[in-house]
Length: 69
Image (tube, rainbow, N blue to C red; front, side, top):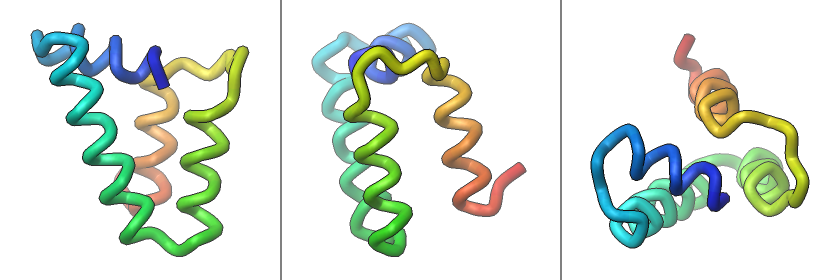
């Protein structure tokens, strides 16, 4: 999740602390709105250590889950 927070901070110009708050807010919102199996996948992707997946690729994948191309 640190990579995602850093990416948001870099892309928006927010401080790391503000970016973490924003990321946490969005993740919690998605976990509340998505079906349980998909919400669990979010935790799995963000909670995994040593992930080779690029944070921007994770966001693209999330867009696919939400029906965006």
